Length: 340
Image 1 (cartoon, rainbow, N blue to C red):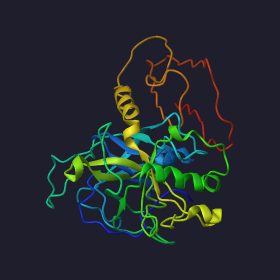
Image 2 (cartoon, rainbow, N blue to C red):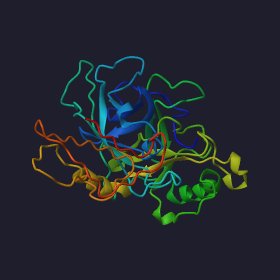
Image 3 (tube, rainbow, N blue to C red):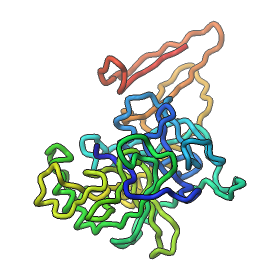
């Protein structure tokens, strides 16, 4: 697959990635994420775009380090909502690979002191004009497979140098046809990605760590740590991409490809503000039910629950003004459930 895991790295130090999140499907790790606030997680859109399971089977673990044990500051949450970027499409995984996940409860952040002294913390977002030079060493962490077989139990990390934008663009053009099945080339000016990793290969992020942050020291290396990228995809985990143009397509590699968070800061800010719709009680005899954040069509992976109650002896009449579900006999894509 094209999506990503840590390769060529080493075990991380306990507490060194306090912002990292493990996304779990029925208890098994499948993607990474980063804490933005005590209620919001940033991850990759493709983690949810291809998910056929109900969101009720997805959980989010913060404070995770060793998957074999319950770490002291480990906290597990359910998913309340998922917002995938409207311009993301699974057939074009190069751009807009970002999603925001709202948790069902608040994370206990750094003001809670644990006996180890380790605290769960959000990651900083970069400034819109954040200048982090090519060859800057950044870090990716995760629990993705480091070889064929089981996922590693202990959090791993790898250092990756940023690739110059022009070189990133060139190498992605060389792998475009083989990775994206010869689909029409999107305007390169519309790309929302950056690249990181050595030309010779050997170090990368690969399957299982998608969605986790690429963190770099801002301020010319003086800090703080910022989430410059979101782990997205790559061609051949840790495979060399030097001399790609003279290799057969099946042998070509790529650096790690990450969503450039700087380019999507307005979207992140807008969505976090837009989604501040509190639960509450509305009393009336009749009305129209709409998602307050999306009064029109619902976007992919929206999960809405409406509870309607009436006094004893009364009934509820539901009338649909517009009803359009994607046809699938297993209801894997769109579904409406009405329960009493």
